[in-house]
Length: 291
Image 1 (cartoon, one colour):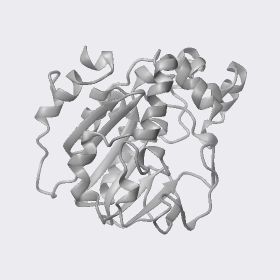
Image 2: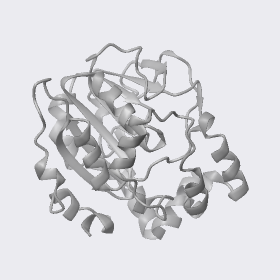
Image 3: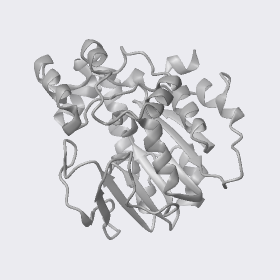
Image 4: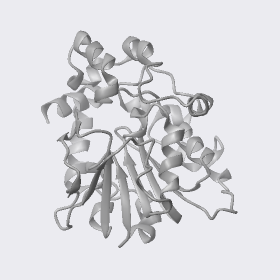
């Protein structure tokens, strides 16, 4: 908690800390939540890398309270964020629901799940930790039912310790997919060590501790392999063939993208979301989106 407060003060100052505290107390769901509520109410979903505070009751996207059941995947039996993880019916995501099923699998390989087995997939601040995001998304889309919903949240560079790094290109993400980049990839480590803003990442310790953590990323998965702005997040979801429904950029560092899986013979029409004049860009709180 103390480190989280320090990170907010470093990135947004005292006014930012007041805003975050107010959001925790009286938060209202963002517009994107209202768009997809009919697709989430009473259905069964899968989260990648949960549980996530952003999906809890009285938060920005409170899907936990309305789903019939949510299962979860994590990459290992222990993570920096959750500590020890036990498989089975142990995923406690909401105090008024029975636990969902907890699985230990890579985000890029959901082979234990049959195709079209979930009504929605959730992912909050996970995709940036994945070395091959396109491969991960193709798996997440595969397990979605037709007309199922993907709720993706990634960090905007302006609000994070990535603020000094350039936004990754879509072409780079496609290349990672075509080259079959593995989760042990360290291509971006030199850039990260050079440009990572440690003042916004108090959990990383000093530079030497951060360097050691970076070298062991295959086990801790703390690195942000890729850097997002709102435009990249939108174009990536379009690339994997989903129909965009809503996009919201929200302080301090959230990009919400909600999209739907279409029938196998249908193609998305995402033109309203792809142009530089798109409403979600002009309304974004992040300056680089508006520019």
